[in-house]
Length: 482
Image 1 (cartoon, one colour):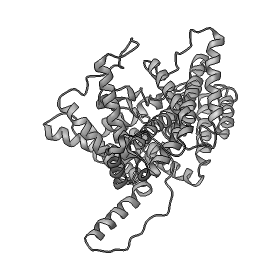
Image 2 (tube, rainbow, N blue to C red):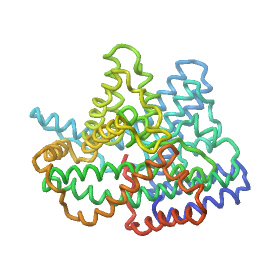
Image 3 (cartoon, one colour):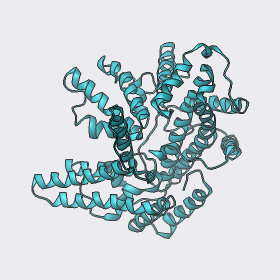
Image 4 (cartoon, rainbow, N blue to C red):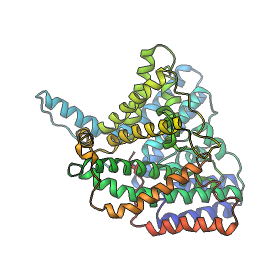
């Protein structure tokens, strides 16, 4: 069930009305309803994988109980590692088994050794990377004493499977979401209205910008050998806005939907394309994943403490793992490695905490230095996205080599370029709106709030009209594959 589908447009109001009226504000009934709704939501993808989700929940919840009641530190650690290994084991089998088998086979073939290997003929369970990390955050925080044992299975199951975040995040922490699930909730009109605004903006990002940019990005990337360098740059730009509007659009919808139920999820994006250096970009892009790796991998490895070698090692580990988390393909690992190379000079010169606040705070425009810093960071990001989008490493290098040719100075041309002009214009308008609203949680959080009411509603109707105008075949969100 897609957020941008008719089915979800029917599903959400039904769950909302049952949640606030049929349960009579009984917390236990509300949570049971959320769990049942989340199971139905997930089963709409493929009911068979609902069993995998439930097994994943059980293999963290009960080891957590046994770990909490254990007196021996060794037994506690045993249950911790049992839960971690089984959780990552399922993720590894479904997501990475074929990658390792094929890579090993190719490597041995290069050495003249030919072996028969077996790959799995299974599809990747949607959302497995996200709900696995939800469970890992709970068992690790429980072991570290950051959170108390959750004794109610329903509460824990809702934490892992809450339907707005189940498929593509944000990646929640037990310390943040579980207390909200256990606390009585009352309907807040202002919070719900704010949630609807964020849902509206997320749908605009996804349907109007991302889905249309995807069409042109796919055309150019899939036929890159036929196009000029300038056209390939345009293709990289299309993908740059596609992946941002697709994923941040999903996150906006998820946060808005959760707010309708009185729950606040972790913010996942903070206008990353306005970053002045690559460290700032990673503080603003996929925040829940970046901070997860920071807290559960980077800091335990030693973080930025110690000598230069340890800092370099830990930086590469965190970015390579991040790349590999996105998919079983060498292109994602190359993308992670490139971002590590980007990040190292900033970290080694101790400038990685330089730009904390949003750029040009309280001002209409950035200064010259900020403008060029943003431009350079944006250019580096666009270049890195080529590896992320390419089908293979050779495709990425071929794409880049064609960019840096004489054809870079030609006028971009590709099949459908005339149809892309309105989308380019809308993307520019979108970028301006994002700039204006960059100090808020999302771009239109405060836009028009103090306007004369008919003007404010006229703006909402324009956004809705654009959504319906560009709405075509339902397009999956790009991060569902991760």
